[in-house]
Length: 128
Image (cartoon, rainbow, N blue to C red):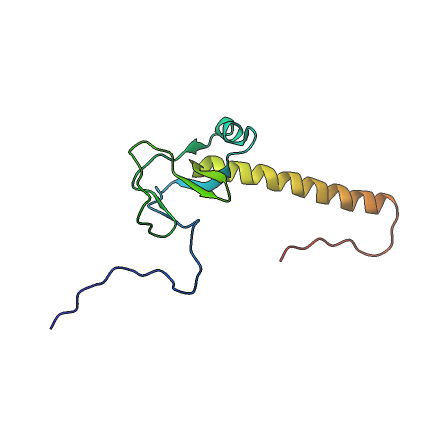
């Protein structure tokens, strides 16, 4: 007798994976952006685009959650709508490197200032 594969099941413990994204296109970094103030437009100015691909699924399966082709992928919780947005991976990595450079510069200035003030001891900044 052969075994047939059954569909994957979601947890019964009460937790739902509402931010789980399936069907991501390789080469992109995805994130949810809350639709508050001018946040969506700001993210578009930074190179993000709203995901409208019907093959991208968010969260656990829901019976009454139809979406039309070309409709933005969203989640709504507590009256707040969040849009799934994506950016090219290379641009994302550039942004992360720029943010890290700012952190490195601040840390370097802290060390320089401590040395200039003639403080005793050793200033060590570590990341775990």
